[in-house]
Image (cartoon, helix red, strand yellow):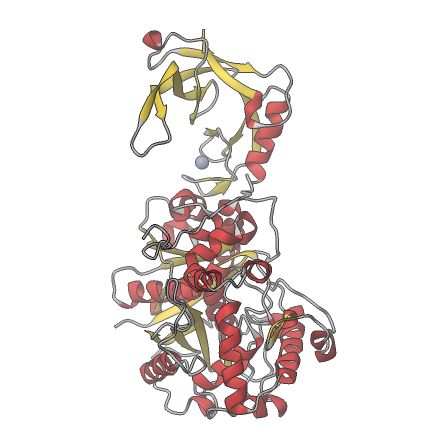
Length: 406
Length: 153
Ligand SMILES: [Zn+2]
């Protein structure tokens, strides 16, 4: 298997509504900087992998509409759509292509233009079966699902279990949310920027559904991300400091609180996220990391709701099970901490769904390349872990990145 | 038995309303229609004029930077004559009172074509390579419908 590097990263602006551009134009805004940054042109690209959730915008095969305008004319185009994990699956697809030797340089594009879409249709593609069970029992879910863009119905049960088990409190969620919103202020590509927001401000937001408040949730975003995946030789010709993909793994498990009509759950420990730990173990092993808590320098788990900031820090084996709230209290997870967690501001601050999981990997790449600007973590980053969450909270994708090839 | 609710199927009505951004280039094209002008974007590298316009020339991967007026005359590249419409029942059709002719029209000065209605035309006489001309709405409102159809010359 060949070594694979990320040699360039590009973002569009991320805001709630980009009414002035269409999907093809929005994605082009992420493509242009990635070509400018790497000095590459479409002639250097061997294949394109794209990802979004077409059910949200209602535009089928956007990769075929847009890829010519994204530098992909006359090249293989492959769309990967796996729910919240879409972006991480896109990156893994590109990794497979380069690692296998089939293609040398692959352009990845992940995007969502949520303002074009319809909430009900969006739900149809990710959470309708879940919602249907609530309708069946006479519970009207749509008002708050509409406000939050999807899957909170399942996550509240998960958060309550986690709190019961660990002693984590809503106050922890308030403080984590405030930290993430402030991280987002320092990230030029983030959407929700609330300068100086405090835990008290978050605590004053409306309780949506116990134990999650409005301030613990993510926005719906229009945005796109582009990256260049390439071989060792080509990466070194493009940049002195590429970010290397060291380990990849994905794992699915029993669906939680899902099932057409009945709304049952075979999985009774929703916060366990065994598939995340399984994937993390596999990816760390591939990366040659035996003690992730000591060897990983920063983490970008997929955190659309505040409780996941704690759960995934644990499931990615960055501390013992149930220890994350205490470590957070001790200041470990801030931008200046020993193990920064979500320095980007997280999905909680920016959620262009198809792009979100790839942006976790892009953030780790920027941190390793030293290009994260104002939200660059204070410690040097040699190893980073990125994570994507999808499905009915039952699909986890883990990527380990490093500053040196294997 | 007739009192039993349907236990075999779960019916959910989905009412979807999208609001697609037409994009910066298309927005300018539609604004042009309000002035009865067909606008195309010229690629600075290959000089092709794209109608409807695009921000990026797909062949050259450069941004289009010049706007040019095309038409109102054009050439029929291909066409079809619609004879039926759906009658609302599964798989059912009913005859249209008047067949509808649509064509792929390449405006004069453009290097691309788009689909539009061919009006004031005898379906038996419509043919590829036929010359046509734009017919505008009496009152333009800045919408795609400002360009009503193309008629044979
Ligand atoms: Zn051109």
